[in-house]
Length: 85
Image (cartoon, rainbow, N blue to C red; front, side):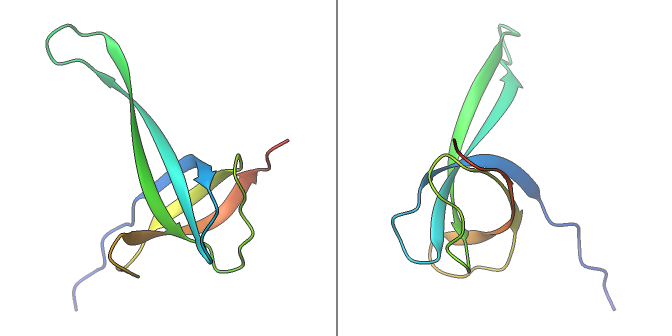
């Protein structure tokens, strides 16, 4: 029996909580420019499943990769790291 690979875990900020059981999370990554070697900030939006509708806009959350739950939803909210003020 094959071992399941480790799931990706990311931390980001909730930018939208308008939908039922779904939040949009913005992930920020720092990468080096291949030619100029300057550090650049890259952003990506992920759709994440939030079963209890607990996360709200501005909250910092930890998400983990999961099986496809819908056309765009492949992540799940594991915990709320910090609440928005």
